[in-house]
Length: 402
Ligand SMILES: Cc1cc2nc3c(=O)[nH]c(=O)nc-3n(C[C@H](O)[C@H](O)[C@H](O)COP(=O)(O)OP(=O)(O)OC[C@H]3O[C@@H](n4cnc5c(N)ncnc54)[C@H](O)[C@@H]3O)c2cc1C
Image (cartoon, rainbow, N blue to C red; front, side, top):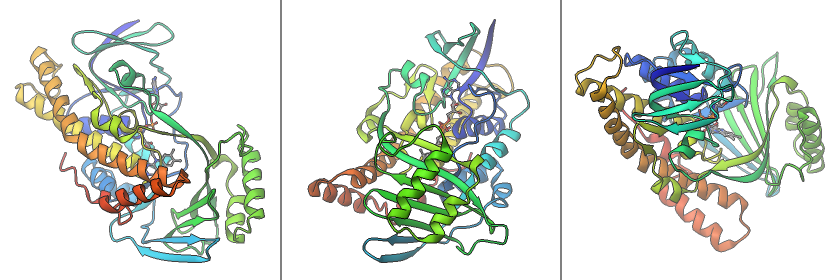
């Protein structure tokens, strides 16, 4: 019941799989431990901006993924109550990918046997080097290097002493709707503010498939949300109908594929000051993706920044392997482990400012949507203007070559 590995990644979501693939491309083996029995592909679609596409290029899977999703060329913002709308051109690459396509494409490029499903890490204990992981079934896994890509409620983040992520009540219904004869929405992403509480997003995936979400700034219990996604859809439809939401939106939700529906009841985030000052490393243990800087959906950068983390971490570890004179495919020896601690330190330094800035932007956007205080609104707007959030300044970041 005891085994030992050089590099272990906890969590087989976007970040864990991208890290394993990035390491693999550098000739370094790792083992991904995922608690679900299957790769988790729920959650509808994910908007990937140009900074995320840069990483997918480096991982060698961008061309394949581009085949699955159309380019989005503009944001169509509509304020229903104010009867106002604007169209903003998107100048750089933006596509909404089906999460399933992204996860499956990452996974199939990772060597067979490097992803272990149904492996829940319940506890982590210190060891030198690395850490010892334990499953509820009593299995013990020794990891010389441990990377926590286990999302917002990360057991690895807790082990290295980070405080718990915070959450805010929010209700999201997400899903896909198929239009067998083609949809009429072109290549625009619709952002419809129905009123101060209800918000609808709709993005084209292909000519016949759109993905949507309905967001509501009220706790899910008050929004009549249960575990029954069809009941939630029914509730959402009734509410939107009462608010005179356009028929094409109601039809899209009504005709959505019930199997694709997914409800999110909380949005997790780490406040920017936490991200700016947290210790992201303990020896050769670190975190990446949502485990490091969960930021919800407010600026649509959680996934793309997780891809950036994966690239930078793999690059740093590969450099340390080369520096210590070892071959990447050889087992880690003592010098390489010392090198790994330095490499992780470099990774944390390189990522800190970037993820702190994204967390600040997401935090300001989330606060702006929730607050009723004029002064707070103005303060948030000033931060967003200063950082160029509305002009998608954050998407211009290039994390470099793998
Ligand atoms: C409503 C919503 C919309 C969003 N839209 C966008 C968007 O358009 N664009 C964008 O870039 N981002 C978006 N995001 C954010 C994005 O989804 C996340 O940032 C991204 O999925 C993070 O990936 P991850 O791999 O770090 O974490 P996760 O996707 O949470 O993956 C963590 C994995 O770890 C596994 N795990 C957890 N604990 C353990 C354990 N103890 N042992 C073993 N395995 C474990 C989980 O099962 C899971 O598979 C959105 C988020 C929300 C909530």
